[in-house]
Image 1 (tube, one colour):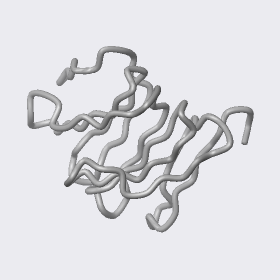
Image 2: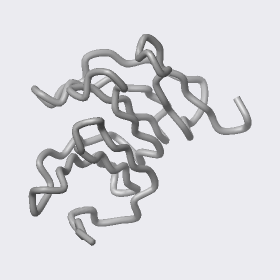
Image 3: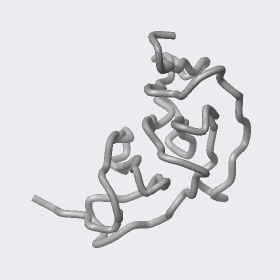
Image 4: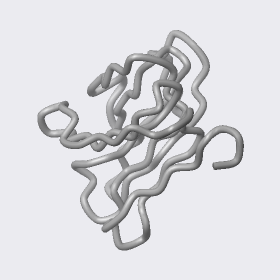
Length: 113
């Protein structure tokens, strides 16, 4: 068992890449990138509010999506640590995933949307 202890509040979602990197989304308003072979966080991705969901791109693990309380679905580029695209949702994002081919992203929203 390997324990990562960098978050300062509860972790509420995780995503593994096909190359064994791990993303964790937290109530502390961050997403953190880890690799099982390294002792700590490789990169921190700051958000405006609680991050409820995170998902690696299924074909290209240099990218991931995140969503949460601020109602923004973000597409991140891990190589430069920046948001490449984002979309405003009408309500809080509670879940976000890519389609299996990676061409689309979907988000589940609060109140069953």
